Amino acid sequence: MAFSAVSKKSGRTFYLHSKEVTLRGGRKQRIFYFAGEVKPEAIDSLPAGYTVGENSKTGLPILKKA
Image (cartoon, rainbow, N blue to C red; front, top):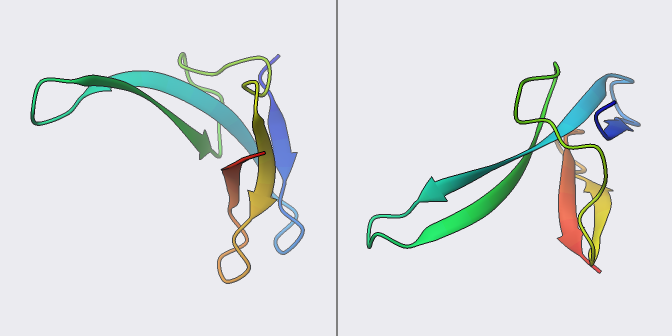
């Protein structure tokens, strides 16, 4: 089951995803993002050293370094 976070503002559930992207300079970087539905890139646990926060304006969950 994918890691999920519930928005305090809207009450919607968001699921954590991760994928590796290639930046313009050719460097690869792993990104984390929340989505409203479970996709194939969903991950089961929170990455080490991160906590979940919430954007106060939009109510969307965000990852913060601990």
